[in-house]
Structures are given as structure tokens and as C-alpha cells.
Image (cartoon, rainbow, N blue to C red; front, side, top):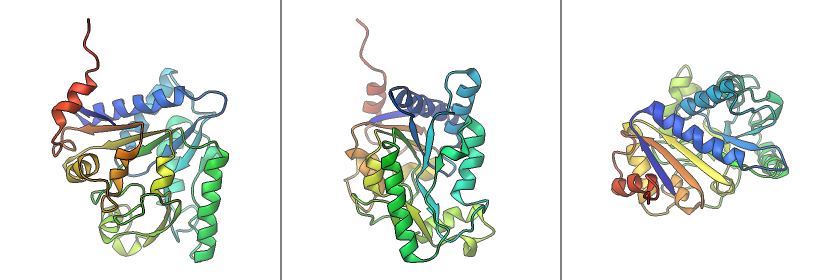
Length: 262
């Protein structure tokens, strides 16, 4: 695991974008697949990718986008449905084709239909050749995607109940708490771990406890993001506030400096 701490959220976003682009450049012989998270944390990263497009450093027209999750029960086209969010925050920013954006279908409220949607989404990811680099945020309770505390560490895409903490955190995007869906379809922790590289972005002091527990605590279902410790190519990009609880900060900084010059 590589932990990169920057002075500001802007610098954090730039380093995260660099980690994403480095992974995409390794893809050969097929179209790259970029895993996409929603929420506030990755927004700066997506803006940095947009700037890279403007500079001519990268072209996302041949890239596929794969969403982490989707609410259950929102009608198609709802502005806070994650397909619509990703169209605004990623497709329009980096030039990713909407036709190449895959999002779980959570529009039904029938359990059997949702289970079929989850299985179909797993199959879609496999058909694309798997995710080359997955962008991630982290919830204040340590959730990854919508894998709430208690999620199985080997879980696959499925229906999940959202915790009260998550619904309250997301109420700012809706008219009020009562409008926030209670359930979602989310990639499982096992699905996330299948990605070839994971890039986690976290900024702000509200994420400090979750970040410390995920990176330096035990591997446990009580902190779903602790599965990051299990992945062979994880890059964690933090600002100073989000890194405030890390005990091994000096080591991370030393490691990021690289080999000494001779």
C-alpha cells in the first residue's frame, strides 16, 4: 500500500489523478476500464483528469466507466441517481461516452429483479475484462462503496441496506432525510478487490478516524475499507486533515520519497 499525504485537497486530487493515469497507461490490447466512485471526495480527481484531457495528455473516448453503486427505487433520470451524477461529474468533465458508462440498475423495488440486476452487473464487469483502476472514497463509518460495517469481505454485487449514518450523510443531496433511499445495489468488497489498482481519495478531518482504522487497524468487517490492506496495488491519497490519525505517518512520507540518490 502506498500512502501519499499532501498539504491541500487540490494537491491530493492531483496525485490521485496521476495514480489513475499511470494505471490506465499500463493497459494494452483492449479498451481501459475505469471504476468510478461518487461523493465529494473524488470530485477534485475528476477535475484533474479533465484538465489532463484539455492538455492532450489523455483521451477517454475509448475508456469504459463502471460505477461502484446505485440507489434502489429512484426512477430513471432522477438527478441524484448515480447514473445522472456520473454523467454530470465524469462524462461531461473528461469526455467519457455515456454509452460506455455502466451503472447497476436499481430502478426496481422487487427483490428478485434487483438480484438479477446485481448478477448482470457482475457479468458486465467480467465481459469488459475487469476494472483496471477503481476510484474510491471512504465513508465516515469506514464503508467502501455502499458496503456498510458488517459486510462480508468477499462479497459480490448485491442489495444492501444503507446505515442511518450513511443516509444522514447523504441527506444533503436530497430535500431531506425521508427522501434518501434506504437500500442500494453496490459492488461487493470482493468485487472491488478484483480491480487491478485501487485509488482511494480522502480529505478533511471528518474522514481521519475512518482512514486510520482502515489503513492501520485490523482487517475486519466492522471497517469495510480495511480490505485495502489486502490488495497488492493500493494508492491512498490524503490531505493533512484526513491523515491526522495515522500513527505511521513518518514511514509513509519516507516511503513516498523513493530510493535515495547515489
